[in-house]
Length: 213
Image (cartoon, rainbow, N blue to C red; front, top):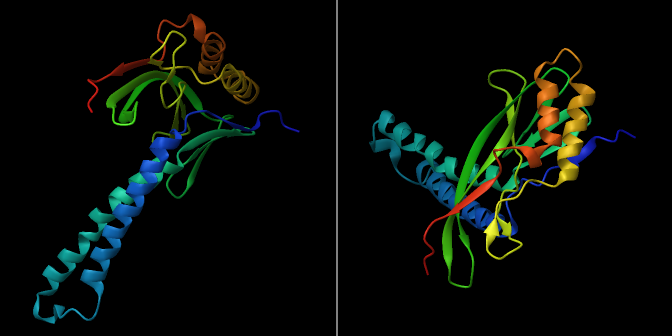
């Protein structure tokens, strides 16, 4: 059996965030369905309005569809290894990048959201982390953050940003080393980085806004 097959990475949103994303998806989907009913139902006398106005009003449905699509994309987000492929789950489709023909680069990405830290205590959290960019072409690429999506309880209290588990980093390094091939000048550098993240001067970091209650 392929030892690199179906290795998932711990980059999904946490349970609390995913529940909120699902709630918002349902809410915005209901708004989109309501708008579609109002502008496309034959019982409403649109005959008196100019055709341009009718279709202009109906075109707003695309705007109503954007929020539920975004919420679904966040809710379903996930990245994993499937043999020689790195796969990212989108809102509806999956993007697969072949490690055998891909190029590799490192960058830093950030994301932020409002997190609940107590029954009635919330604060804005921002995480910055080294990120692996696996590119099949200019338009087809997967950005894999090398840190967990959410902050974790710290050893001495509070919350901190953490690398994804070392086993996942090693599985990723081994897959790149196995499939990228010798001609890839960028692959060995990435493999070395993944196996020595503890020496990296750039580490996952978290900053917190003022808590509010």
